[in-house]
Length: 344
Image (cartoon, rainbow, N blue to C red; front, top):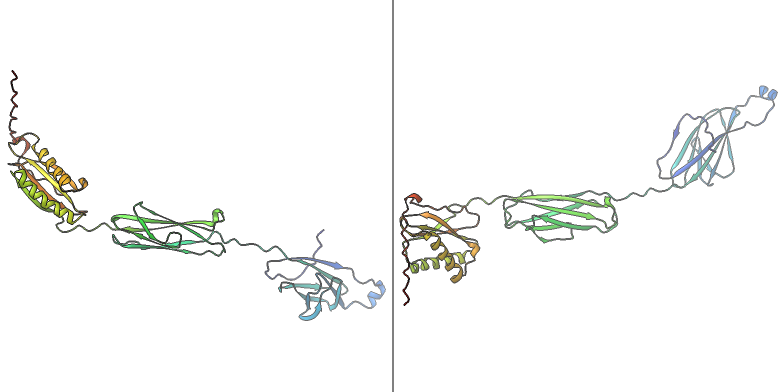
């Protein structure tokens, strides 16, 4: 049963993480005869206090009055408002203002017990990633995590980067990584960090991302170079020119070669394709040039059979063939029939 509470003018509680149960009740006035009360009206009332536990410091109207007990302690006071202050075991001051009438007794019973202390979880926690917004191709990018975690567990840092050819140079498993941007011009590198405290709680697993853009490389001035051209040449002459081309390609492994083969106005059908295939086979088989670095194209027709050799740096705009004779003006030479021997 909850004890009733007497009306009060003002109620103040200190903020504390404990629970105090208060029972405040009216006590009966001391028994007196009616005739005596009329001749001698009461000029004071009585405040009675008990607490569990005992031994709590108490003040009445600002004056220390020792300590409380589990039995009632009483103070006679004149009619009016009186203030009772009890210091709780946690050091907080509990205050009650009591309106006391003459001839009345007001009882204050305080039952105190420690409350449950709320456990504050360190999760979720903020994670912020910092990184440059852009860098040039070939520069090293640093991604750094700022984690505001107040728990005691060791944090796990799991990094991934995209695109897949972006390479983490250092820092896996730590709050900071470095990433190589070489070869990623014109692309955006995104770093993703997962931070968790190993508890398995979803709120204790945070994900953050940061991106860095690698601008495209600026176009080079005159990047494509016509290395050589040979028209109506013997194959021995072409091989000498292809040897020189192979030396250039071996000196700069970032380049490729474009070979345009042209048929003459009166060449045999398919002459351009034969010239291009012969040049490719020579570079690959005899000079050891990787096939992926050799681009052979049928350039159309010129007045004579021709082979153009081009050096193309990485990222440069490829050259285009430059035919001088329209296909409709070509008069291919007739194939000479092969004579069959007569067998007797």
